[in-house]
Image 1 (spheres, rainbow, N blue to C red):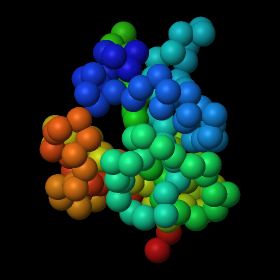
Image 2 (cartoon, one colour):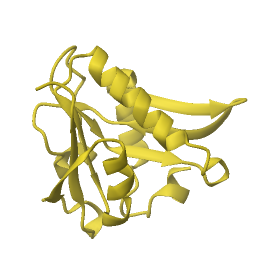
Image 3 (cartoon, rainbow, N blue to C red):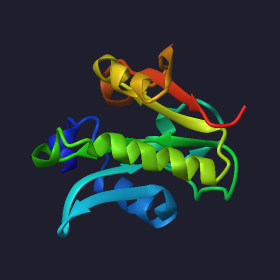
Image 4 (spheres, helix red, strand yellow):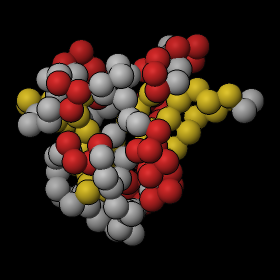
Length: 146
């Protein structure tokens, strides 16, 4: 599914996925129907409010409380799009962040997806320093705690 959702230069490698599943299973959520994967969301908890490119290569286990819940990947299969799955994954992500007393949720996205996240309460902090995949990204943050 990641190949249909992300261009090759932006997609996580198999090794990166394996590392995420091993190190951060508490923040790797899969949406499925009858055993078929419809979508997923994943990302480590980080100390700072903005995602940096090193996170796409190496992550650490999540702290129990605090920090920023990042979104390194949110994907929905072509067959399952238009059913609100991405929105439901994000709602579950926010509940998880609240339960674990995170300061907020942070992500980067392309300009065409910013409006989707803004409708979910994210603030656009402008162009990101990220160079991941050689494209322009924008930093979006949703505060959970003041």
